Image (cartoon, rainbow, N blue to C red; front, side, top):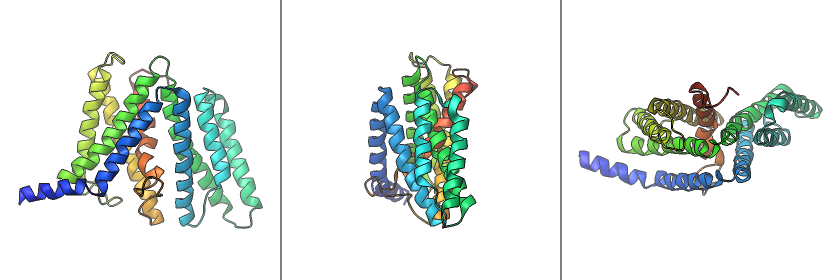
Amino acid sequence: MAGSGVVDSVKALHAPRGHRLIIGLALAVFGLGSVFYAPAFTLVVVVIATASLWEFAELSARKGTTLDYPVALVAVVAYLLLTSLGLIHRWEGVLLAATVIVALGRATLSSRGGYLARSGYTLLGVLYIGKLLSYFLTIRSVPALGIPLTLYAVVLIAMTDIFCMVIGVLFGRRPLTTISPRKTVEGALGGLAVATLCGIAFAVTPALHLAWWQGALIGILTSIAAQAGDLVESALKRDARVKDAGSAIGGHGGVLDRFDSYIFGGVAFYFALYLIGVVPVR
């Protein structure tokens, strides 16, 4: 009986989730390749943010009030470009203030009503997608260490995603949360353990030369945040009563479905670097 259970789990892994694993690996390889050329990496992040924002707008529309996509799009792209140029500290306040003013103005002139909700969703979209993803560009711009640190972050989050799924399918028994019934305690702990080990292994390489405990801290914080990002997006989908945020990636969900863990994971990674003194507070 136990043997047949393992066989069934392996078969399940090779079904739709197996396709998700392949797609996840392909996207990770593509993303990793772009890290070596800063403009290409910026472009990749902008494309991901643009598509994710569109899907977020669709989710909000299903709740009855959509965000102002043109305003949010301009603000998100500006956020990312200013970050890549190292100018976001100087212009962030102006950008967010302009977003609120323009969103409120356009909502007021609209005949659809829901002025406050429309403006609120617009600002939330800018912060959730634009600000949080901008941390990857900040990590990439760290002098002398930008490339290895960005690779570090992407690998940790990818390993968390992959092994939460793999270990959850093979050994998962206890549901983690009602928000996403397929996620299990075993999968979450397995993903955390693998990310922690990867964090240690990456930290002690000559490129970074960090202490093992620093790598462990980075791995733990990044993995927890990545899983939290996945759960937050699951909650948004559940609230909108949809299975996937979109269908942009080969019928296996939307861009936001694939990169939800990166949205929170990048912030946590940067915070971990700050805690161990690698980067200044942002």
